[in-house]
Image (cartoon, rainbow, N blue to C red; front, side, top):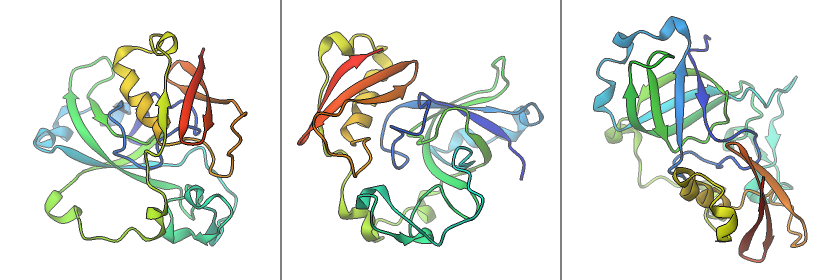
Length: 220
């Protein structure tokens, strides 16, 4: 397996990354290694609206695999089979994300760069491959979601005081609010007095959660 590219994203650490791809409008870049900075390799890609990204869980290394894991959406206490989850702790640390292709820039100082939205991938993550998403075969609206539907994304109301919101670049504000609304906390933590800190782009976002309301209380 060769690393063909790396991801540039506003997610500087694992805490706060969307739990699935396609849940935000935030944009990321896919920057290729020198060997793959060949414009011909991207010929025809502009005809696709979405892509599959195959990447490495580079920050989730484990010496041996476990047949069961604790999905966060089940509170972190219930064990499920690893192959019934999207846990990063797998026999092979491979991630799969569906993203929207926003732009292909073939002529940057870093060679061809793909601008995508909806990535759930940490900044610096190695990429193994890119494949086009084909709606006629990859989309299955009738598919069942198993226990993953036990709690839906986007469950919190976000109270973002203007004095803090104005510190965030305008093009990142809606995406940050989307992430916060999805409740980035570990599911076993529910104290309304706890202040959480989440790295986002070049900022540390501090917030509390009380009931169904997340309140931003500081930006550094």
